[in-house]
Image (cartoon, rainbow, N blue to C red; front, side, top):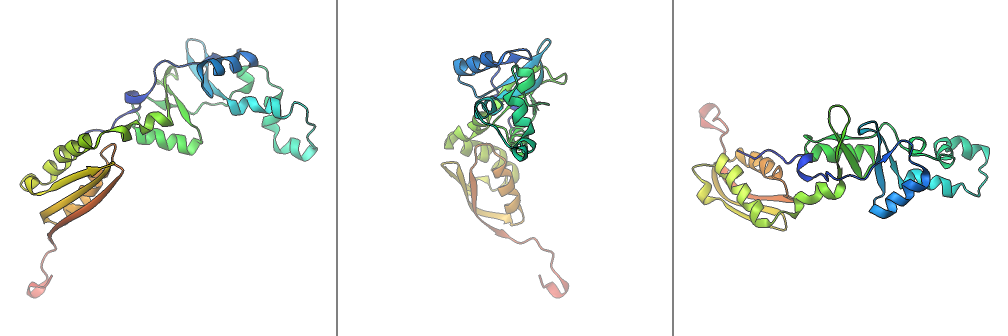
Length: 225
């Protein structure tokens, strides 16, 4: 059977750079520069995530440093103007933090990132305690799998599973993550199932099915199909 998908804990970084609620503005900037990160979780107590502070949260201080926005601009950008006057992580952070649990699938994490328009997610437990961090780059690691690894998994978990009697007659080729299936099977209705299962194999970029098979549509009156 197809293998279970990788989860966030498989790819996340466990060593995380974070700051406390009371961290001053310049300390945040220095920490980002030192560790070459563009965003950090903001923690409270023993490590509970209460927000995230990013470069975007810091930039309004420079943007509005010597400007005098008109009334319309002030109303339109109330949040940015508030951050321009902020001095600590607690005042600057975006809250509540958009987070993910360690047992979420990579697909679920990717959806959370896309919907939230963020590049990384703090990984938390049921009590919102920080466990790690996962980035877009981490989610893309599955596409670093070799073609040989993908081919072996497709043969073992899809071809042998769906077509145990015909697996020897089905040819699997993988090039740059694109899987090509060739051969003849007895039940053509399984072609779409095979494509769906192969697409679910992590690291697969696309599937090109060149399978032929016999229709299993029941015969109508008089033997017509």
